[in-house]
Image 1: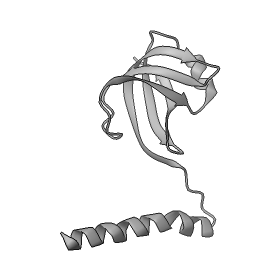
Image 2: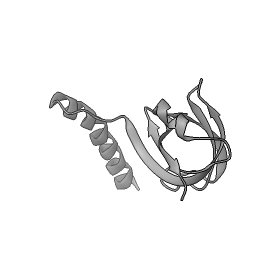
Image 3: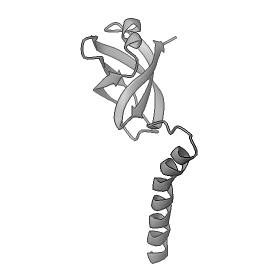
Amino acid sequence: MKVFRNLLCISALALAALPVAAQQKGHAIPATSASDTVRAEVRKVDKQARKLTLKHGELKDLGMGPMVMVFQVHDAALLDKATAGQQVKATLQKVNGVLSVTALEPWR
């Protein structure tokens, strides 16, 4: 158990140093993490707040079950593609620590 804990600590330190090393070499590090694409129903479009309320299925990569949830929209132009009641394929991704809709298209 002690060996596992030590390996975990070393791995965490190494991962924390990656963005610094990449920035020193001039590489940009995107502030994103896991993403998931899921079928969802648009419940509400709030253009002023740049948010979508979606009833979505399970998000395995993000570790979330099906639910109704409000998401920020990464690109405001995506809001023009959505109407309440519409079935969509949504890509959800953590951007700068905030779960956001990064892609949206009608479900076919």
